[in-house]
Length: 186
Image (cartoon, rainbow, N blue to C red):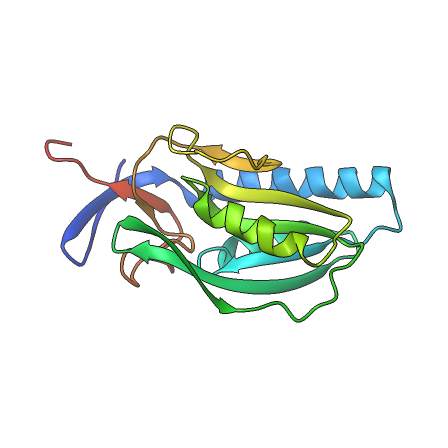
């Protein structure tokens, strides 16, 4: 049954359940575990979560990842309400030494790719061994950049979504399910 919730002035309906999300996070963690144990057991990637949205995804992911790894955060913003502004504002920078490290950038959602392109360009200045991109949600119909997305939780249509770390003007990050904006008549 689809649940309807209201955040501010908008209604949202259930899109992905917490069970679907947990299953997919487990699969992604298993993939990381296998890839980094097989490729190079000495390699210790650093997971770089893009705040605020990725905090929950990254926490749940690292609960299952069992390889040696580091973790850090980068805080960016590019949204105003339900629209991307097209402008990136770096709020918190990187303090770790990233030279010759494999960086796995963890995003909650990749839509146009403006944010991920900015992050990858900034990270390249630190001379990492490689940069991989992981996102829980990917909107292929909106994506306009050429940065490869290495790990995708779910491909979704170009809907506005909230929950599980994603928000609408500050609300909804704490929801266990992911909800999409309810269209008139749905």
